[in-house]
Amino acid sequence: MKKFDDFNEADGMVTAVPKNNADEAVRFDRSIANRRDDAEEEANWERLVSQLMDHDLGNALDIGGQGEAQISREQAVSALVESDDQFADTALQAEAVLDYLDNQNIIEASESNSVTVLKPFDELSGTEYTKMYNNWAAMFDTCIERIDYAHDRVEEAKERFENREEETDRRSSDVNPEKRMQELGQKMENLVGDGKPSDLDEADKQEFKHLREQYHFYENMKEAQGPELDPGSDRVKELGRVMDQFEAMRGIMIDHRENFRELALGEAIFPEDLVELSEQYAGFLSSLSGMMDPKEKMEDEDDDAFFENLGTEGEIETATEQAEQLSDVTTEQTAQ
Image (cartoon, rainbow, N blue to C red):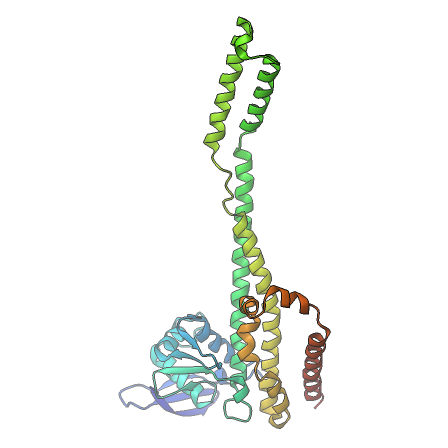
């Protein structure tokens, strides 16, 4: 539950007065709840919100199907105290920062033991929580950073695998047991000709036995080699395919991040002009997971139906018209 509900602002600082007289007042920089300037789309609190999301994305952060994201207050306090950005030095200061952001309608730190960092974006327009548009931008920024980190890890894994392959090739023997077996078999066939080994004279019999002994030696070497193993190339290829998908999603996320920042700034300056843009985003969240999970699309439509509709003009034209409408709205806002 909230520990601070009275905030005094002076000289760029906030003094948070605790509800419990036993606790001490806490001071911190109020710029955390500001934009960098009045015309800046990115908000100062985005890094803090990203930290809340990135602290344990997918576990501590609970994102509902309608786009409301919550984190326990305890996890939120830990995230701020442990952050490299030094949002708070102590747990009490972290509590004060969270309650101040709640006071500024940037997050919702309810009386329960949870902190809401995202509300469904199509319900924000015209409410006191329009600053949460920047929280949506922060969410996409967090995902983009995770993709960049994954990309670096994949590149490192590929480099290590390639170096390992080069090292293995240098160590490998130039002798090919199977090739030697073929050569020895040919020599034995040439020696015996159309007859049988028992028909050979004593000298040729000795030569045949010598060749056969070598043949069995290389036969054993071939067995000792075992089956040809591929220790990791398939996995590296699979990682490459995954990264291609991540790169496609990354570009989309960058677009949405910037759109949400623009939407947030527009709401702060011209709230009456952005209703249409907000409506353009309606339904995006509910379809987001569908857009990013090809397996669901493949379950909904069999291969024959998909192939028959591949390249349908109507779907492409509809998507193009929607993109043009969104571009027109954004252009009108910029002109104003």
